[in-house]
Length: 368
Image (tube, rainbow, N blue to C red; front, side, top):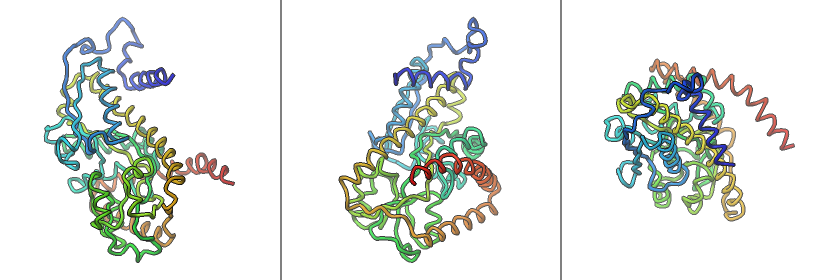
């Protein structure tokens, strides 16, 4: 049953993207002159994650399997993890230079190369996954992402959502804004800018180095993902305070494509490539939700020493104020950032009104 459902979903995606449009209109006509070509295209993908990293690494493996299967073997994809290429945060440059054809990472890692890339992972106090996916597909998000990445000879496609992330692991309880002063915390993206604004010292550290940095005191706190991935990392052993989220309400990873390589592919393989990316992104979100639910239940039973906390309201107020200040400053100095911020804000206002009367109202009714 699961196999049938997945195949049906693939068929819908392919039909909507145009691969089989000609077939449905006239079965006697092939959809593309390349449809019967047996030429094989070998592509290399570099990922930020270590070998066999769960969920994130599963997304790239699923993508490879789908792309190769849907292309009937005309696409062959080699995946190199961080263990092979030795640069977890070098994916942008790898793909831009053509050293790799494809990449899998997080868009907000590239803010030092182009500040406008950070908007496409998740924004503090912003859209949840369902809202953000709607923005990407129908609200202009993909077009804006194309505008940002096109300048670098790249294309970015959604690469899998973790859903709403937890606010992080802390060695000490946070009772006021003063407790954030001088706090060394691993937190990337715009959330890192906010933490710096309220007095913390944000840093960005690859996944494989996080536990050691926390254990040795190089950092005092960190955010990673949520129970889907955090428990296996062992952070609770040295930082028992686990805070609820605010900074990444709908974290979306990305596939990056070298545009020159992409445009050299036959049109049907271009569509198969992006369709396989989107389907593996859907699978990753479902897997993340499943693993988070399972591990949250296990955490409550197995690790009762973990103290789940929510930041005090004055801390939230300070972070919200910092967020608005920084967005306003960025908009004033960067016309493209201003356009992206406005697009996200306008869509969030529209989408959140519906979320509030649908999902939120339903959940509220269940808690009474």
